[in-house]
Amino acid sequence: MEIVRHPLNPIFDSESHTLLLGTMPSPKSREAGYYYAHPQNRFWPVLAAVYGEAAPRDDAARRALILGHHLALWDVLARCEIRGASDASIRGAVANDIVSLIEQSAVSRVFCTGQSAGRYYRRLVENKTGIACGVLPSTSPANCRVPFDELVKCYSAALL
Image (cartoon, rainbow, N blue to C red; front, side, top):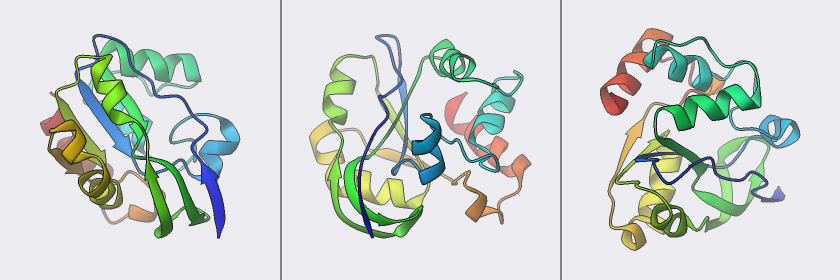
């Protein structure tokens, strides 16, 4: 087990109306310094497909994709003990200050990218924000049972 502090800033601006929340950046994302950095994670290709755009190749393009569609991106947890990228191993979870992000934006909808993120949001954050979350399928390579087209369909239904 390793104690991990969330190293990435949220991506949002005052016009962001929909917040997408993961659980905690994976070791690959922490190393690369951006969200969903594992080369087999389907988050960026799915989001690009939802909006009919090319998959972003660098951090500036990823940021432009999020902000250009008035989204916000962060993770539920600020700190936890975790083994690798295993959400099932998480202990001692402490939430990010999601209320502050919401107060600085137009966020009125929250979607969690996976069951674990949804569970932590409901347990640690929802009563503070007053915004119920929807849970989208995880785009993680560990969730390969959900085909790409189904991910695009689920994310499109939530975001469009």
